[in-house]
Image 1: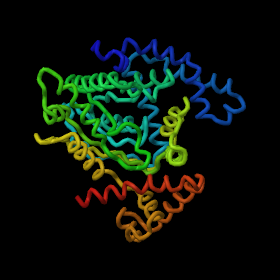
Image 2 (image 1 turned 60 degrees about the vertical axis):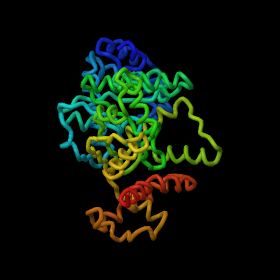
Image 3 (image 1 turned 180 degrees about the vertical axis):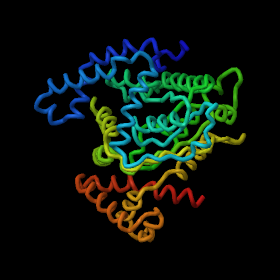
Image 4 (image 1 turned 90 degrees about the vertical axis):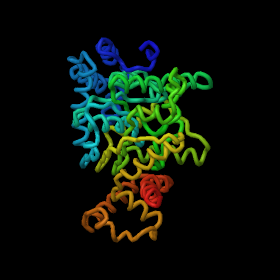
Length: 387
């Protein structure tokens, strides 16, 4: 395991010292206080930060192991699901063998909630919790790195270049294979960075990275042999509402109008917290079938196989069709929505009104990005259906 020292999650014996470090980290308490209690933080920043720090100390007093950490997270996740969703559903778990380790590859809409929801579903299905891939570019604040690695996250080095990038990719590939061979379940996203435009597409580089460790090993395994050994299961996560839709639209607008988007040190913290506590509406997590590659498979072909399952299993919500209706009224007969979604005309009318109210709170210049974000899954699903 020495070869993975700089990317692996924390171990049980490291938990308590890391927790103590976090409890003393004023940046963490300040970030939580500012997000959870913005008005109080504005007028009484010191007092509310101290209160948050006291609550954290109490909640984490008993924590000694990774399992303890995950029990705390489960308690908060239960509350979050209840308070930020109007329902969490799943399908496909019956295809998951509890005695096999899997590499779950999902679409990527939210930094923390995507793996958290997959983790939640498989844990309650009786599987071990996941090892989670997280980009080191998201961990510019020390407390974020500590929090993630306490929750069985391993680091993906995205801040390296040239030969160091190649070395990091080989190390990552070897670590994922090591986890699967050791009986550990793993989650990775199908792409680097979230799908801000609503288009879910697996990066070919992900497939090539997964093959690296075996391609250059003594066994010199083929792409087919290497990938099939990982027990890949595509996962589709569909949020009725994206809590970060405005933030994503602002980023896309900035890139289109200025050519680039510069993150500050709080950008990722803001996205993570928004994704966690923001309204998500109905959420559906669909587990596909284990991918089996043929001997003629290429990295491009493998990515397409994953895409096909993710898009076919993606659950379209009323808001996806309503956004499409606002973009292109003649795209389909939208009067069929009640039958299509097994609901009533009144329910569709309510959802249309709610979506318009959501848009009204967002600057008009961002509306095209928001509408495309919600409408693109409708288009992608139709495209897959034609193949």
